[in-house]
Length: 97
Image 1 (cartoon, rainbow, N blue to C red):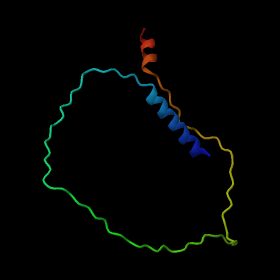
Image 2: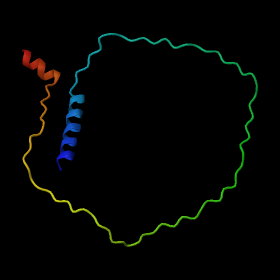
Image 3: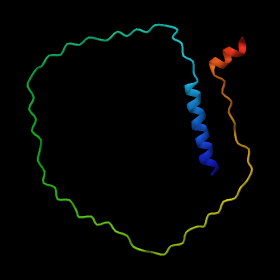
Image 4: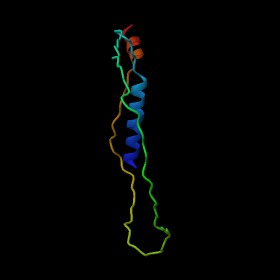
């Protein structure tokens, strides 16, 4: 039970961290696309091969068997879990004023 809770907490904190970012553009970008000239040298012709395929017959069913399986028990235990405190850029600005 501890691992799924920890995983869900980390995912939630990661998502919160990504949405709490404050992004400002500091410089304009520029892309120069290369120019190409293409010339057709000959016409193409494609003939695909043909196949006759005979597939096997597959039958799926179930059978009752007796097997030995481990017995799992759980217990409550107090453990220390990590905590994360996120301060957004807007909250930082409020704290400076």
